[in-house]
Each structure stands twice: as structure tokens, then as C-alpha cells.
Length: 160
Ligand SMILES: O=C(O)c1ccc2[nH]nc(Br)c2c1
Image (cartoon, rainbow, N blue to C red; front, side, top):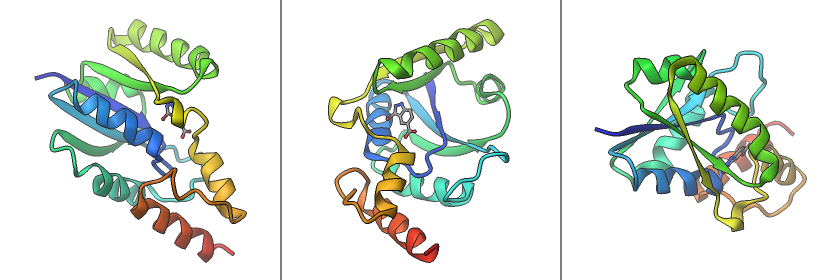
């Protein structure tokens, strides 16, 4: 049984995230999409809301499950018998940081990190940018799954 984790904040998940998750689902017996719990980071959606949205938009892949974790990712991998971390790379600018994290994680426990180039149509996508554009009324309808677009629109309206 091969198992990989796709870690992230997913605040909220974008079509770029789903691109990576779906492709990983085609490579591994099981993919765990794990939402990072970072108490020092203010997020637009709670961990519960982010995991709920992810479960909805990943239901299409029977071998994908959604979870959350707090602490070292390598500890989460060990506790869940996960052999690989899958990260999307949108651009060269992602590489430096991701390489450092991958080397540290391998140093710590030997867990492997596999980099997957995002579909070029999503190279500019970041959850933070999507939220900013949507907050100023920009059209992000092609960048998010419909159900997440609805939730984002509602949350931003609540905050006005
Ligand atoms: O949305 C983000 O912040 C974000 C960050 C890093 C990322 N790597 N691959 C993808 Br898709 C991606 C998305």
C-alpha cells in the first residue's frame, strides 16, 4: 500500500491544489490531503471548514481522504505510515523553500518528497491572491471549484 500526503493550508483550496491532488491520486494507493493547523496564523476559514470543503471537492477520488495535523509533518507521516510528501511547484520561486524543507524532512526521518509541476494554467495561483482579488470584486470563478467559490463569496460578504 503506497500512501502519500499533500500538505497545505488550503485556505481555501484552489483548482491548482486540486490539480496536484488528482494527479497524486492517480499515482498512489492512497492520498491524504492534510490541512496544517497553525495557531499563530490567522486564516479566513477554520480548520473544520477547510477540511469540510476539501472533502466535498475530493469526493470524486475514492482513494483520497482529508485530515489535519499540528506539528512536524515528518511525525505525521510516521504516525500514518506515509512514505512520500507530494508538493506542487508553480514556479522556480517555489523551489528554494521546498528544496530546503524536503532536505530537512529527509534528514529527519528519510521521508521522500516528490515535486510535481503544476499545470501551467495554474502557475499564478495562490490562495492568498485569490482571496485578495475576490475581496475587491474580481472574478475568480475559473480558479476555484464552484462550491468553494460560493463559500468564499459568502465569507467575504460576512466580513464587510
Ligand atoms: O495556494 C498556495 O498558497 C500554494 C502554495 C504553494 C503551492 N505549490 N503548488 C500549489 Br498548486 C501551491 C499553492
